[in-house]
Image 1 (cartoon, rainbow over the protein chains, first blue to last red):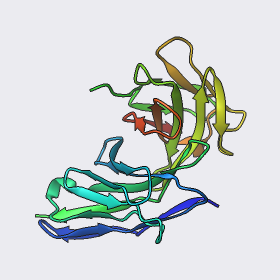
Image 2: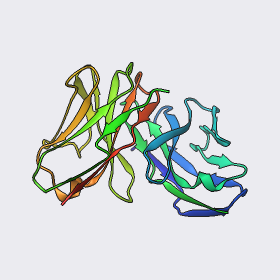
Image 3: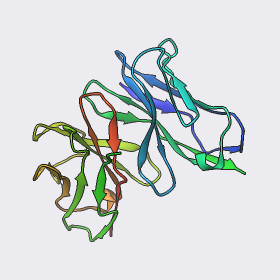
Length: 111
Length: 113
């Protein structure tokens, strides 16, 4: 069936390190893909999105490219900050319009 | 910037009691959703709502759950007789059109004792 798989956390990095959080999806057709972020004690916020193959979503220094050939949507940031500490959810929207979320990856950034 | 709001932020209730979770979607949106997140687990779809009726619901959304848009601004989730396993964070979301971005509220943390 349709699903989203993302790397398990927690991921712990030092400030200014390079970040990659892997995400792959199974799908028929071409879903829209999203990364949502949940900061401590807060709700879900849309971080970035891509709606078709080869699209690159970007926001706050984060980027993810919709790769149809590898069915992936990996999240990257060149230099993380302590304030990036949060849980990151990869997600896709099905034809039936419900979002399928990955399990989330907790990111800890050390000063 | 318009945002989705939810009330209350926290609710504690006794098992078997009814709860109503409230949401005010973004004003020009037409598609409304409820999701939940049990502590430490992933966010799960519950129900979608469009044109005053349910479009889609998950297996979780059984007869104990109902949704309503009682007026032009609110969107509510009712749990008729709460169970311990209903304890979770409940998120409301709204969207302007099908398969477009869904914007989430801050959530209501429900604890059933």
